[in-house]
Image (cartoon, rainbow, N blue to C red):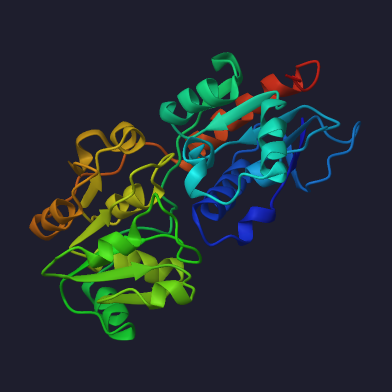
Length: 313
């Protein structure tokens, strides 16, 4: 089996980039009799399956059976808060509907895809994400070095994600405004609006080694999102031994269960207070690896390759 894999999102510094890089590496480490070729232009007779790991790569008329990874449906659920609601984005969702199979990270997103896009559950595969192997607990020397590099105090709360544009569901500005006694550190590529947030420390984009040390040194990860498809930073933090405090929303509850302290989504003051009260040791992350994800993804490819073609609504 030969798979055309759209690898363009590997350059993305957000969760989609992490997903694409980690899955692509795992598919190659565990080929299971198949071959993955990086291209977003699948040609008939050369490929058996095309996989777009992001909605922007989904094709309206794929020449081979298409698999699409759908990370969430937040823009459809909250279209009044997002700009990507024009014709181009509607065509992307139409392309998703025409995929032979969808991969989603949680049952929560599977339900959204069924309810909002009319995709049958038989065409949806739930394949969870996992922490990258580079994200492991770091020793005191590495933690001290990263604290010195970014002028961080010994005790701080951590948030990790993309800061290029304000995202209503992430509620970073509200988190920065909420009262707290501990320093708040925001990690991620940042644009001007983020630099105007009060009383926070921005690290900008960091390497995986630095991110692991920042996780390891944090008192807790605080995760204020009121809507998510998975919540990858939460399992990354647990993989580095760091407690997680998050808002009690369906996807996060599904992924973490009792591995995190969950608070009412409407109370960010309680979220920060719980973060300051968090104690180690943190529970281990869910026992799911990228190798497991690769195995499940190869199974999706096999089913898609045996289909008669894209399903057109």
